[in-house]
Every structure is written in structure tokens, then in C-alpha cells.
View 1 (cartoon, helix red, strand yellow):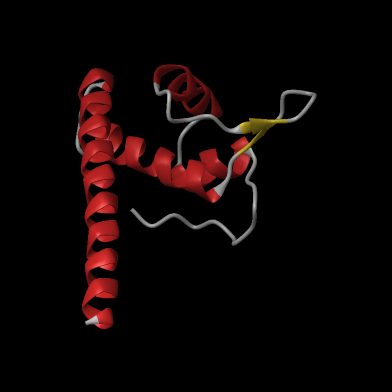
View 2 (cartoon, helix red, strand yellow):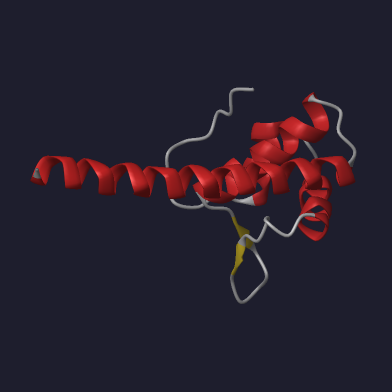
Length: 105
């Protein structure tokens, strides 16, 4: 799914709901259901979504709306993806260290 959002630091809930073609109430509901969705809120409680929040929302949207996962199934898949991401980060660190060692030889 291609998301049509302008390049900026923060997005309103209206912009996010329009980009994903969902109701703002669904976004607020998913914030309660998924721990990874934590947009910044100002003193009035207005939500501001960063590009990282958008990526997280896009992952949830893909799993639930496009792949047909239940909320619980999507939560499990996100845990698996997070573990895989952590492993990849560790492997990239090791690769960098090995490249540094090789260049010193």
C-alpha cells in the first residue's frame, strides 16, 4: 500500500486517517490495543504522529486490513518481526566489527 503523506516531522490524526482511508476512531482504538503505537500528545491531548509512528501504523494496517490477521495474530507477528529486527541489528554490528578487523590486517 502506498501512503501519500507529505514529508514533515509530525502528522495529525486526520492526515493519518485520510492517508490510510480509515476512521480516526480506529487509529485511537489501535493505540490502545498495540503498545508500539504511542504518538506524542500536546497539553491539549492532540496527537502528533512521527514518521516512525506512521511506519508502525502501516505494519499494523498491513497485517490486519490487508493480510486479514486478528488483533492477537497481528500482535504475535509484530513480536516476531521485532525479534528478527533485533537479530539483524546484532548481525550488522558484528559484520561492521569484522570489516574493521579485516581492514586492520
